[in-house]
Length: 155
Image (cartoon, rainbow, N blue to C red; front, top):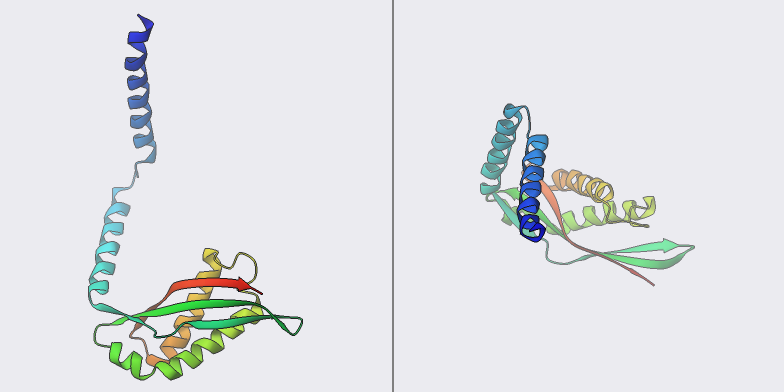
């Protein structure tokens, strides 16, 4: 008899827990949901007007400790730019790469690539510094810098 009631009891407990979790996690302010949906739609509209440019070659950054190369960081970068700006990016790529290398070397000296270098805070700071350089070289048509690959090889 108890064996027959156990599945029903489990079902009732699970359903009750699901309803309670739904009530607990529901946003009491429905306006915030509307604002979130509006923000997502705005971003989607901007993304539709964007194009993505992958920079041709990887960036190699040596990490120097005690006057010796202790590790190498290899990155692949791309840019999200306004529609129609890809050709401009490719025309200015040599100067952009030079500026990006300067930023990456500075970041290496500051310790950005030491330890847990893939932490969100570190990558966000790196993206911000690269974005500032990209906008200095190309202008405000650059929306964001994309880190498409990153790896560190200790020597």
